[in-house]
Length: 547
Image 1 (tube, rainbow, N blue to C red):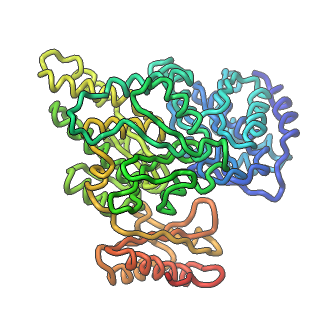
Image 2: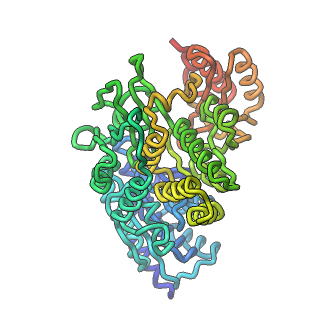
Image 3: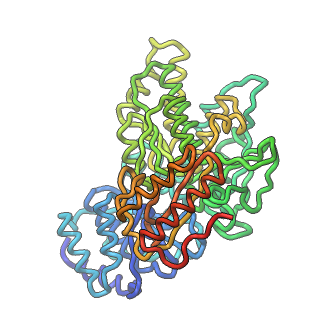
C-alpha cells in the first residue's frame, strides 16, 4: 500500500475534529464520557482498530457502549482477536491518539505504524456493534468513516450486547470453531447447550424454571426476548425494564441493585419468585429475591462465582480428572466468600487488581479459571489442556456411565459459557442449569454462606495518583502513613478489613470496609475516609459521619 492512505485518513479526520479542551484516557472500560464529546474519539478508535487488525492479521472488534453509565454518556472499547480486552501497550496508543491535536493526528498514526512495524499493505477487518443509546448510531458512523478511509473491510452488526460482539470476534478469527459468527449462531449455541444440561428431577425439586429479568432498559432486554424463542420453553423468562418505558440504567440494572441493595424500579418483589438484573450492555448480572423473612436478598458476583466453582469442582472430582480449578476475585470480594471458597469448597483463590482484564489474565493461570467481580461481571476460562482432557473423557468408552455423563455435562457447560468476557445472558443460563442440577431455590443457594456487612464510600481528592497501592490494591504504599492508619482502624473492629484505591476515571479515592455488623462496617469506612481526606489531599469538607 502506498502512502496515499495518509491523505485519505487525514481528509476523513478533518470531519471529526477533537474538542481542544478535552482529555481522554483509555481505561479498563475503554473510553467513556459524555456522548457529545466522543465523535473524534470514535473516529480515532476506528483508525486504531484497523491498525491493530493489520498488526495481528486478524479481525478486531469495536463496541460502542457506556455499560452501566447514564444514558447521556457513551463510550468505546476495542476487542482483541480472541475476544479479549485490548492489550495494555495498545491502551497507551489509544490514549495518545485520542488526545493528539487535530494537527498532530497524522504524526501519532505514523508513530504507531513505525513503532509496531505495521505493514499498511496488509488487509484489515473490523467488526462493529453498538448498544441502544440514542447517541450510538451517530458514533458508530464515525467509526465506520475511519475504517472506510483506510479501505478496510468491516461488518456492522448494529445493536448487540457487548458480550455478543466479543463472541463474534472470536468466532470470525477461529473460522467458526468457537461458534457460528452470527447473532443467531450465538443464540443457537447457548440454547442447545442449555437444553442438553436439563435433567430429569424428582417431585420434591425446589428449582422452578422461571425467572424475572430486569433488562436495565437496555440491549439485554431485547436479546433475552430473542433468546426466549430459541429456548422453546426450557426456561420461562419475564422481562422488566425492557426499554419501552424509562431510561437506560435509571433506577434499574445490575449496578443499581448491587449498590442500593434493593429491587429496581418497575419490579415488584414477591416471595417465591426469582429475579436477576443485567446492566446496560448485558455483561453484568446479579440475582435477588424476597426472603421468607420479607427482606431483600442479593446474590452478587461472589455468590455466582462460588456456585459455579463448587459445581465444576464436583464434576471434575466425579470423573477423576487431574485439572487445577481456581477462583479469581478482587479486593472487593466479600471476605465470607473467600473463606467459603478456600475453607469449605477447598478451591484455590487468587486476588487480582480491579478490572476484568486483570482477572481474565490471572484466570488463565489455571486449567479452569472462574473469575467474577463482586459487581456481577465474570465468566469461566478453560485452557486448551482442560478442553482436550474433558473432550477425551466424554468420548472414553472405558469410563462408567456416570463418569462419562459428567464429562459430557462439562462439555455442554463449556459451550454454554462465553469464555471471551463476562456475559449476563450466558451466566444466567449457567446459574439456572446449576440450580436445576442441585434442585435448589434461591433460598437454598443463598444459605451457603452469609456475607459480611460492608460499606463503600468515595473521597474527593486533588490528585488521585497520590494514592499508590500494591498486593492487588489491598495495601496502600502512598501517601506515607495511610496504610499504618488503616491497619490501626481495622484493629478496632471484629472480622474487619478495609482498603483504598484510586478511581480509574475521576479524582476520587474509593474506600471499602467490612466488619461483623453493619454499624461497624459503616464506622470503619467513615474512619478510613477521614484519613484519606486528611493524608491524600482531600477536597472540600471532610466526610460526614454515618447517621
